[in-house]
Image 1 (cartoon, rainbow, N blue to C red):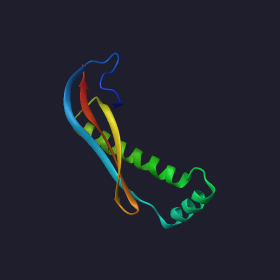
Image 2 (cartoon, one colour):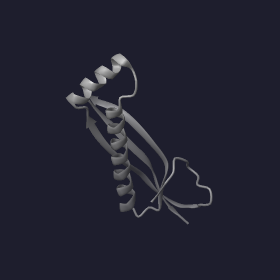
Image 3 (cartoon, rainbow, N blue to C red):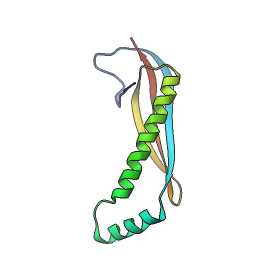
Image 4 (cartoon, helix red, strand yellow):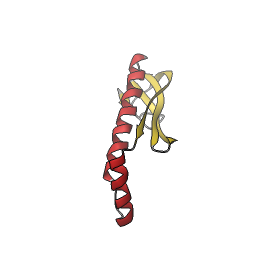
Length: 104
């Protein structure tokens, strides 16, 4: 599966648009992470536990989006975008979406 953030792909001609595909996951912060984040907030710097959590969530959202595209027998996904929204106090949704396409 080829993944692109652009709508046009150099060297590829889009034969058909198969429609919107998406993948999402909701992740909650853990109590231990919150303690470390609070300490990091005092002294400054990257909160690596949160960075890893969000990277894992993005990867899972991409995998789910790709699975949906594979079910449509797509060759690729174009115009891929990500969005994040808070669903409750300690949880956030990561959504990956794009357009499944067949190439000529």
